[in-house]
Image (cartoon, rainbow over all chains, first blue to last red; front, side):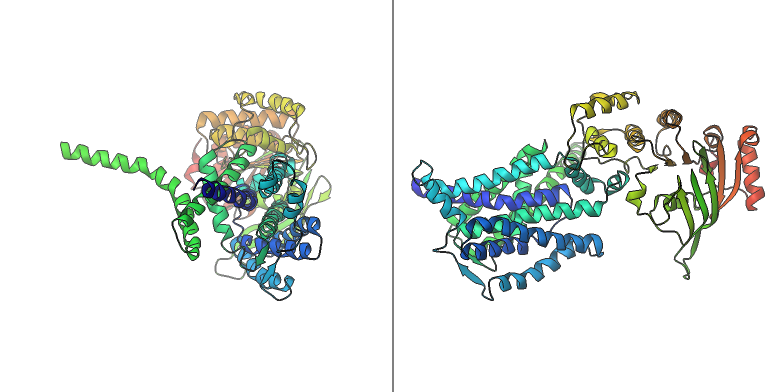
Amino acid sequence: MLETIIGLGTTALELGLISSLTVLALFLSYSMLNVCDLSTDGCFTLGAVVGAVTALSGHPLLSIPAAMGAGVLSGLITSLLQTKMGIDSLLAGIIVNTGLYSINIAIMGGSSLLNMNKTTTIFTMMKSLVSSTFLAQSYKLVTALIFVALVVLFLSFFLKTRLGLSLRATGDNPDMVKSSSINPAFTTIIGLCISSSFTALSGCLLAQSQKSVNVTIGSGMVTIALASLLIGRAFMGKGGITKRAIGVVIGAIIFRLVYTIALRFNLPAYMLKLISSVIVIIAISFPYFKGKKDDYMRIHRAKKEAGNA
Amino acid sequence: MLEIIGVSKTFNPNTVFEKKALVDINLKVENGEFISIIGANGAGKSTLFNAISGSFLTDKGKIVLDGEDITFLPDHKRARMIGRLFQDPMRGTAPGMSIEENLFLASGRGGWLGGINKKDRELFKEKLSSLSMGLEDRLSQPVGLLSGGQRQALTLLMATFNPPSLLLLDEHTAALDPATAERVLSLTDRIVKENNLTCLMITHNMQSALVQGDRTLMMDKGRIIYDVKGDERKGLTVSDLLEKFKENSGKALDNDRMLMI
């Protein structure tokens, strides 16, 4: 029993860390830039597919930059659609997401499933690297943790630079960005390129850790990531960038734990998407109702007093 | 020096909503000149500012600032030479970011990958203390926590951090309470004088239009209908201005807000 719990906990931790990279991407695009990037699902799959194909061709190390580069391209197209071609940002994401479906299958050579059972991946490399140390059992966790730490470090440095600050200001007040002689189109493009590279990295790692990729690997990712982001925000509250970024990672892990627990209740696997939707609804509406609570209490008290009088 | 040569702008041309917002505007503003602009709602005052700062391209004419033709320059590039304040104190600052982060972006200091360093902070503190609003001790607080007057003063500081070739003030004190408006106005006066800035200020307060600056323009229906400076301006009263408006536009000025003194 205990072993099962530890096993499930470890899996949730691994998956939480890997998907937290997508959540960190949304932290940049959604929380900072104020753009809800709906190309996230397709971009996640793109990273998974590009990473898998590169690893299958015998270049596991190269799979990381390849996936991230593909993510940058995807982000570039999404951002160009909304900044240079007058397409609404939500619609731009949906359009790119749809287009990526075909591209992803094309990259997989026309099939919708690739297997990496005997392929050297970034995880198997780490496994042989730590095989004789105490970390032998948790090689997946270590790998995921390294990438997450790097991305968190990058973000907490980047968002304090002039470029990072102008990106945050673009989400806060685009007029102010313009009056600082910075083109908000430029900051949006940079932001979405970076965030998409993280999303793709996340997909690449998930595919390699589960040793297979199919074209639906990323479906629902944007909902899951959004839920994690909001859980993280509720958990950490306001604070510095580093604190908030760590909160985001914790949110992703909590989400996976809840997910795993839900699975333990013998729920059929096809119910998972519904669960993630419900979690997003609760996570987004909870702060809203919390704000309304005081109003309800006030009305309730007034009614009670009127009844007593 | 700002030169506006034959600038026109019509919105929704050839439709029932056609509006001639600017009609053949010619204006020459000398370096260091402080001009106040008055006129009823819809006279084209803000449209003139939008044309100068590049919110849209004009239909006709040319805009030259300090010898550079900026007629077709995108707005964010003009912002390097033009500082602008709006009536809404929320418009000039990013509320979710701290005072020092706002100032840092406005200052243009450091490269793209540079961050705020100790020297920057000292400079920001020094500049903020000149506002005497106690903001110098609140560098790391989000701007969203500041009052409207404080935000407008901060915006003024940001817009003039690197003295611009031209400062545009679009009723920048109209949303503030009288005492705060007075304070921001005298601050404006001081900063403009200290840096010898060239400045255009839209106001609905006729009295301050006459007191502030050294030249006054009156606009109506997209035209400049009265332009006064020097000795002639010194002797003017608010009722003289109202008389001039009637004379030049053929109707009485019926805007309540403008009659407030």
